[in-house]
Amino acid sequence: MKNRFDQHKEQENPEHDVLVATDREHEIILYNDDVNTFDHVIQTLISVCEHTAQQAEQCAMIVHYNGKCTVKSGSYKELEPRCLRLLNAGLSAEIV
Image (cartoon, rainbow, N blue to C red):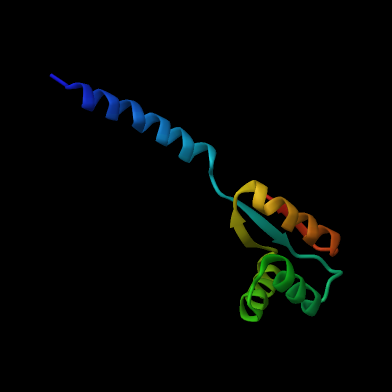
């Protein structure tokens, strides 16, 4: 037989699961193009995504050779202005 405390505890768990499910992380995916230089991509990632120079260079290389790379993860609200800045800088990116 369950006591009142156990019943309350069971009711809290589903709420927590719902909060985790609705607050999932999103990613900005940067895509390769034939327009932008490595320097432009690297400088943009440093300023927009707050990458170190090494991180930005690695992402630029991954994009070049694989066609795409995740450059930032977080909530949609956090990523949307960053993605818009990447797009305004002429890069090809989307939030997934």
